[in-house]
Length: 71
Image (cartoon, rainbow, N blue to C red; front, top):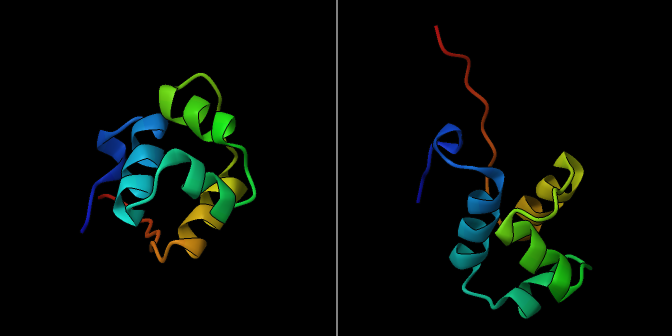
């Protein structure tokens, strides 16, 4: 699957990545050493995550992050 991150908010992206992993919020949280509450708040947009956390999630769940400069 592929998506254009610019078209989504950060909370939508984290939810999409979790759904791609086919895990519940609680299961997903355990894979990256976070609490269920943290994942829930990330997905609801009540808490922000760092880029480092996002990269950790992507590496753990085999998600490629590609940056492309537009002309």
